[in-house]
Each structure stands twice: as structure tokens, then as C-alpha cells.
Image (cartoon, one colour):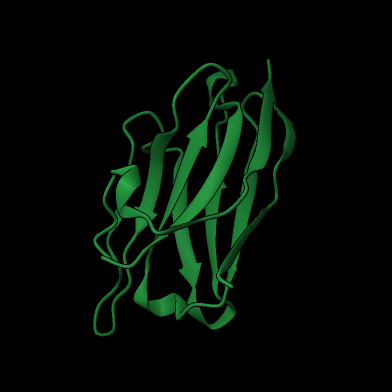
Amino acid sequence: QVQLVESGGGLVQAGGSLRLSCTASGLTFSRYAMGWFRQAPGKEREFVASLTWSVWTAGLSTYADSVKGRFTISRDNAKNTVYLQMNGLKSEDTAVYYCAADLRGDGAKVLAQYEYWGQGTQVTVSS
């Protein structure tokens, strides 16, 4: 069974930092683009960031405008893990954060293109 397990969420003050991790099992991790999405109460799930895989070159990262310059996505294929470093956190970043795997590998912002999803980790930013 394919599993994506997020960790690293918690409570942080505005302006602080957190690093989320997502460890995958049951799939060939390096073949997938990995994405991060989030869902706040009363809102639809939205794209946060994604990172493609590559053999010969560095992967291509994509960010939502709302997090660009504050969040950084990275991956360690040897550990089957993707990370989301979140700096300068704001109250509006409060949400459940989900990681997802996209076999298409293009790091699209469309939720439907991701085949596998984790169960999420809560991030709460207090102001």
C-alpha cells in the first residue's frame, strides 16, 4: 500500500518557522513530482508548492504566490522524503497541510493530477 505520512506540524508564533516532512513508502519516490497543499477551515484545499524529479538536472519548484519567498520545498530521494521549510509564518498560513505524489511529474497546481495523498498535519500560527 502506498503511504504518505506528514510530520512536523504544530503551533508557532507569527514570524516563526516550521519544517514539514513527508515520507513516502510503497512507490518509486524518485519518479514522482511531490506537492504540498493546504486546507484551512471553511476553505477549499489549495496548492502551496511542488517539486519535480529529475535524473540529469535539478528539479523544478513551483510556489503559490501567497507563499513565494517564504516557503521552500526540497526533497531527499534517498530518504523518500519531501520537505517544506516555512519561514515568516502568518496567521493566514494556519491550515492542515497535505503532501501528495504526482506520477505525471510536472508539479502541476491541479489537485486532480496527484494520485496519492497523505492524511495531513496541522499547522497553527498564532498572532
